[in-house]
Image (cartoon, rainbow, N blue to C red; front, side):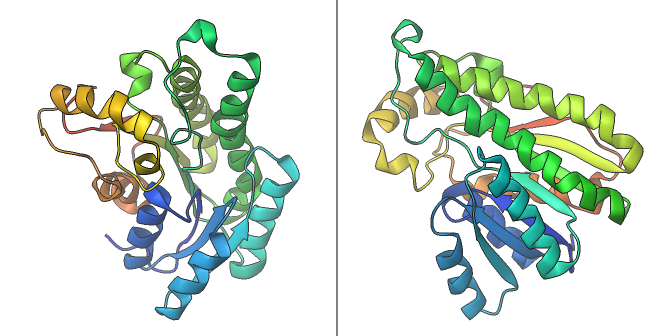
Length: 251
């Protein structure tokens, strides 16, 4: 599949799943804006040295002005936006916690990034999509939204909201030839997750036991689904969520 000269924004693109998505889109010929709170320009500099056409933008996706600046920077650099991958989210820093021990501040932090951040990024790129006559939005949700995993109520709720937002935006944006889909990964041993041994110890074992393909999931397992929704082979698909988890959940 070719994405030659397409302009893609990947939020949370400096490391982990986001970086793997960036690399796949670059391999397919896209020009990529790496948007992240930290490390965006460092990653962009590294990839430019390898001959890739990338732009690094520092952005907190929960900040309305910063998200708008991200979209403006992409348009200024490349003149258009074709693909938005909403990958930025809070997960790897979380500690499994009973729901009645979570605070309002815990909820707001997760919802501000995972849900409001997704909304803000979608809204910021919409004018560019309309000017271009179409576009693709790929939201990274999670299989937990279907399984209701324990001890992560705020995170589970946030990813359920991303799936519902995906459906709502698909119905609104279809008239503008903007396709909106989501990819729901299972528990993934990304760079950030491996730095949180409490999370790994609590989640890895049950995840492996529930998978048909009983091995660890890594970021590279997810990128094919994102590439599919970003490209032309999915041109008649919108409002859908594809679960990528080794067969732990049938959807």
